[in-house]
Image (cartoon, rainbow, N blue to C red; front, side, top):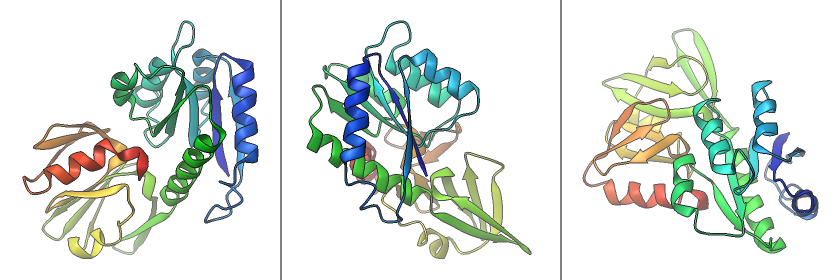
Length: 242
């Protein structure tokens, strides 16, 4: 079940988004037969109340221009206060002037008002596919124990000799013995990239790219090799399309 939130102060727009979701082929044609449930909020404050109560949403359609707490501020709270780094944010607005600020909250995509149904359906399908891939499990063995970690919760994967360090967003990091080349080959989804000989990172958990390194959502710094810099920058810039 994919949990979707719709946050817009215009009831008519909320109705239109709900209609577009219902009419979309994204769920009937999903790879794993996913279904969804949606919940509407008419302000950023309402959404934050739900987050305070422990709600988690896989996907949020967020209006930008709302009174008091706007969509960008709400997105910042989602990432920084609540730590929901894996939630996909699709912003909806009649203006494109906010694109520069949107990078602060790592949006998955942007839909311009008035909403075009075909454009909406295409971007929804991309989001559903990405969520399904992120829900896949990465299994590691530490001694006699097995750990299942959802791929979307993996922040980074580091090799220190034969010690593998799996940094995750929910729970403690996991260290285990393994071969980096073999383990990295299991993380071939489009949202994973290898910026350095000893690292694989989840692009959804990259806060910023600085040429020689990137800063992750857990505050860690991951080096970027000179040979990989262009590929990493391109992948980070076009994150919403993978």
